[in-house]
Amino acid sequence: MGVVAVFFYLFASITVASAFMVIASRNPVHSVLFLILAFFNAAGLFMLTGAEFLALILIVVYVGAVAVLFLFVVMMLDVDFAELRQGFLQYLPIGGIIGLVLLIELVLVLGGLSISPEAASTAVQPIPDLAETSNIKAIGDLLYTRYIFFFQLAGLVLLVAMIGAIVLTLSHRPNVRRQDISVQVARDPKEAVVMHNVKPGEGI
Amino acid sequence: MEPTFFETYIVPPLWMLGQSVLLLVLLLVTVAYILYADRKIFAAVQMRRGPNVVGPWGLLQSFADLLKFVIKEPIIPASANKGVFLLAPLVAGVLALSAWAVIPVADGWSVADPNLGLLFVFAISSLEVYGIIMGGWASNSKYPFLASLRSAAQMVSYEVSIGFVIITVLLCVGSLNLTEVVYAQKDGLGTMLGAPNSFLDWHWLALFPMFIIFFISAIAETNRPPFDLPEAESELVAGHMVEYSSTPFLLFFLGEFVAITLMCALTTLLFLGGWLPPVDIAPFNWVPGIVWFVLKGMFVFFCMAMVRSIVPRYRYDQLMRLGWKVFLPISLFMVFLTAFVLQFMGWA
Image (cartoon, rainbow over all chains, first blue to last red; front, side):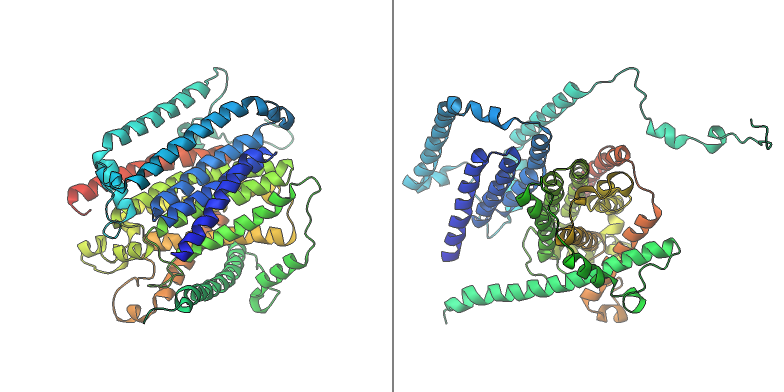
């Protein structure tokens, strides 16, 4: 247990510290890099609890894809750092209240579990024994049987968001020449190339 | 007897450290010779001699290059973001090396053999984009920045199809453990055709379109020609590495080539039966598994090197079209088809 505890405190303290640095660092690119560090350590925490699949998916999806897009956007933006800092005190109360509400909720949920440990067993689908089935099988069984409609609905929401983004940005300007790959590939040298027998000194 | 503190906490890490050091040394020597092979193949196709001065037949060329990089002066641009500038090559090098920890080079020969080994490799390879994007940004210069944006977009795009290929293999195997992925290729299509335990059993035949997609995506993912747009010499000088010199440059270079060896190893494990012999009869199954693994990996690398020397470079829009409009629909369809076939034939 000793080693696990050591790693837990290591990952947890780095997560909290880097999460703090996300809002504290002056350069937004550094913020995103600290966010990535926080994701990594959260993945480490997942790993410690035995949720390997979630840990790796967190890295693949959030670090490998979402944070790359963040980094893209932040790098391309021409951010005025001084202006960004200006409203800090003004927004502090609202941000503080949101943080407080989240904290209370977390305390309630986790505290409830520690006050009455049997609450976990009253869940509709108890967590399967990890010694018998692997992580990925357990999640798959739940997602594709019991929660299939919620799962599909979540996918649908993402699809709608994606189509929405495409519709908003897609613009077919009428006078722009576009490539048609199949036409290009179907070009035939017999039709596209004309051979001229040019006599010297005369030109075509 | 109760295991002592020494036996639980000291011996296994030391053992693992020893294994890792051995793996790293072998890997770095392999990278040196892969580099040499790459240049020799490229030269042979163009009817040149290639490196032939340092050592017999130029065999020590890579080590001479290493020495050259190390003793050069590292230059950090004045306006660069120093921390990130130095962190980027470290990220590139370390990430590429760390994925090798879970690659089994023969039965049971890996530093770690986790349940989700394949997903681990995929996660690491999806992180490799950070070395490039950080290096490009921290250089604080236009060429590296543009190149790193291009490269990041390219790598993220091709990861999608690699992900789908991995899902099809996962469906066929039923596990993400790399050892099980190899053993699942012991019987398959070849056994049904009457050639049990042969190379026809391996996934390359059963999942043929996915094999091709994976091979091409692996080339694109590692930024090799014909998809080497991040460092297209003719337009972007040397991509995200323009401002780098000396050891930081060496680390980028190393990361790139280790990523290539990783992709070769992954192709071998997923589609070419890992360390399994091509035919399970007398002279072939006497050969140790690691020999087959290395031979197959070398074969994949040879194919990549030939592609590099034969195929002209893609234009950026063609590259994106190939990734999103050709590979993505095909691989998505193949995921459905594979799941369908497995379910209705009762093979799942």
